[in-house]
Length: 112
Length: 115
Image 1 (tube, rainbow over the protein chains, first blue to last red):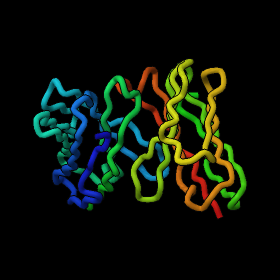
Image 2 (image 1 turned 45 degrees about the horizontal axis):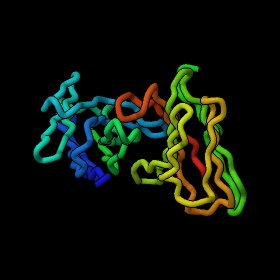
Image 3 (image 1 turned 45 degrees about the vertical axis):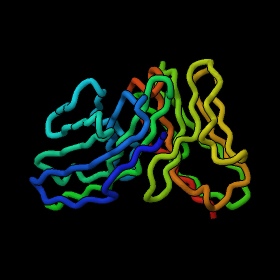
């Protein structure tokens, strides 16, 4: 119930391509879905977040798509750049839980 | 400081020794979290502090692990009788309110190696 399943574990995309990372959850009480970006040797940092009252949120080249009925959400990185190479974590929580449940992470490599 | 500060950045210890890891959260943040990240793995929740409430210790893997937060600010994670499987990066995060609704800011972590 508390798990967030993330796929793929690793992803290689050519520069300029679209990177897509998917997450699925079981707990329908979740109401906050952030994505975190982590560079080697650094802590994760919030990239973009969505709540289930909208189906899509876009910030620059980064878009979250949210499918409430399927209990899935995904991160799309348009025009992927080598600087986007990092590990990406999806997460979920609800106000009562007061802690984030993280997916297992996706190591993204953008080839120049 | 401007961000969450953790010390030491690296710690090598012998199996069986005790270690203390420190976290200085962002000033004014009421919530503080500890996570563990093993090589190639995700983020494993360890413990959560929020204001004066009793901490959520549900993620601590064994009774060798403990944490405290003094004065609602600095936190120390203590691992007693360290084992090789404790080797990981320990991350601290803080936020203004419960993480469920606000951004969590992470420190750079402490890389613990038990030899």
